[in-house]
Length: 593
Image (cartoon, rainbow, N blue to C red; front, top):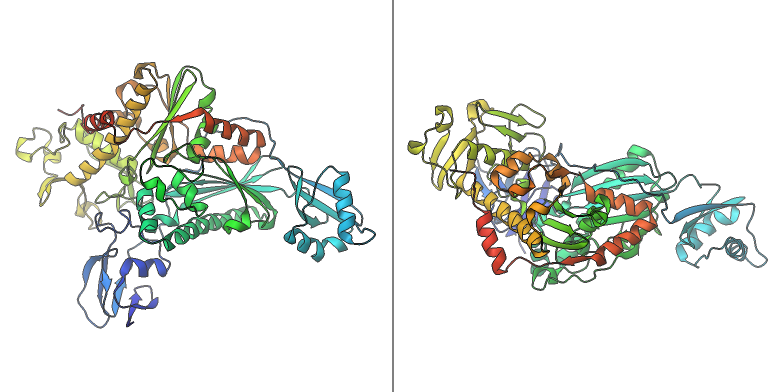
């Protein structure tokens, strides 16, 4: 097949098959560009400037739909590596007993037996009450250094020896807890001897090149089974990247990391294990397995001790996965009296209620709009993002890390919607008020502009912002209405289905980065949360990450996580008549006039 040349403005040059999609070329070249709509040409966020290699004309195209037919020059967007992203890595830290289930034992002297070195080692191991498998990796390590050493350290998982090391290494016993989010992945390096957190690192999930949400990634596997391998490699590559960073921060050798816990929603769980997620995309949305999975690290390609044990959180059902189990574990929701609600507002929102001991969960396909995707100037909470908005009595914006804005992140979008409602610029149905009908301040009225697809509000004028205008369109309002309608409907129906009134809810726990940075008052103004939640909301940070750490540091907590999985009833609400009605009502801005 004919080849064409692609030259990027950073100097990279690639030869690709004629007709290749530009998005695939960008992925192959290793650039972390986002395709929030999964490459369907709908969101417009992969717009990129190109030109013929020997020409002077330039045009903007969508990378996900554009096919390269001739030698082409490609201008990479500024900041494509997505540096400076604000990702929440911390959460509340509950107290519990340290009991990781991993230990080290030092054997002094030579272990030589009568017929082989191994016989001597087996005899000593049995004497200590442990068992050692005749595993090739252990044999190779033992043959290399163990048989010559004057002393050996046994690395044990429960009563099984998983490795042998020369000398006394009992002080070096480490593990990694990982929260695999659809958008972000966070890794925590922990000392299993002390329970101390040694280092933490977070990065964007490299799977996002296949789409911003779980449905896009499931569809990618539908379209091409080879994408399952690619998706698994992307997330494992992200985790290995985090490992490099925490190892550099702590100077802990990778071979001394013997335990890993993974918590993620059901789709992330399946993709990390290279389990085909196709059944998650169709009713009744059944996972391949609901129970915890334990596997050796080398089977997944993790760059830790090859015989390290990886414990993957159980999933509840549907898209309510191990990250929700981890969040329940960390928050102690399953132990609370009365009526309490846990909400993780993310790309795939998950909710769990405990009503007098009855626990139920559901998911809310809020989509990525609340995190800035599919919004004209939406972006993640990174450098240049507007994170806070005030319109009255004057316009005040808070921008992450710099003076000029590049876009608006999730918390800024909720603020902006709330301010537009309070300023009476948006009506109950989410439509902008026409300038001629607006009776508010002139400085706001002049920012209402008629466009091809309705009105839009100019949040930052070009002359105020280094030549870049930032606006919020009618379509943007609609995207956020869909997201908040889905979440609001799920909250109200979940509480109703367990037989309680919203007024009985004593506490609403908000987990995740979005919940931590969210202005609760504005969330109530736009109707993201019901009015009965006022005064009851508490942000608990990255509860899934805390739960992953707890499971890493305690075998008892791993058992408790399995119990939580059995305790929680799953309710499939989407598609029911009740949900459709609540969803339609939830899309309204009831505090608008």
